[in-house]
Length: 88
Image (cartoon, rainbow, N blue to C red; front, top):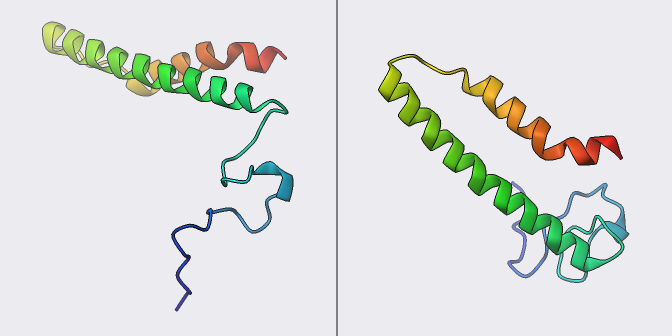
């Protein structure tokens, strides 16, 4: 039986570098915390755009009666969203 984690203790992988997390237990990927927050905003917007894309695909499927390869569509979407990161 594992010991329960207190609610105020941040959940962190045991082998994570100690400087990867801030004092609140949030992961830090950039030197500037504002960049971490900006990246989170961009990812939230990408999630919202994908939800709209899925809704459009469902409407197109219903209208045409033909199924769409959603796995291929999501792969294309992810490639487009992360292309600037992959170029760096």
